[in-house]
Image 1 (cartoon, one colour):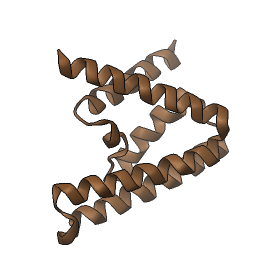
Image 2 (cartoon, helix red, strand yellow):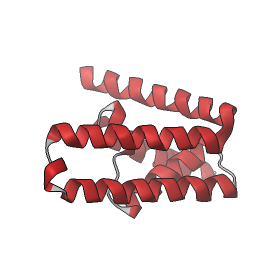
Image 3 (tube, rainbow, N blue to C red):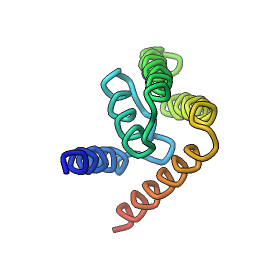
Amino acid sequence: MKKFITTSVLFVAFAVAAMAQTQSDLFKMTTEADADVVLKVLSTELKLSTEEFSKVREILVKSAQSQAQSLQDKNLNTPEMQVNVLRRQTLHIETNLKTILGEEKFKAYEAAKTKLTEQVKGNRKN
């Protein structure tokens, strides 16, 4: 029961955060705390092993640090450049996720991401 409540709270928190973002913004992170929230959701949804958890955390934390640095760079601080940086980071994260998780878990990740994206789009129409 405790795990169900924790999972529900994490999913709702992630869904609310995602509603304010576009599909490519699901990995918009600028702090280690942001990375940990995304990691908890991924871990809960995909039932990551200890090894997968540590590898995914390393990638997410590095991505958050990189995004924070990019936002501080005056040359990259235009909306267009920020979108490009975020797309590049998302592609990098997802490429690594596919390697770490394997085909089956990566397909589960894609399905969960698609479902969440559809919910966000539906909420924006209302």
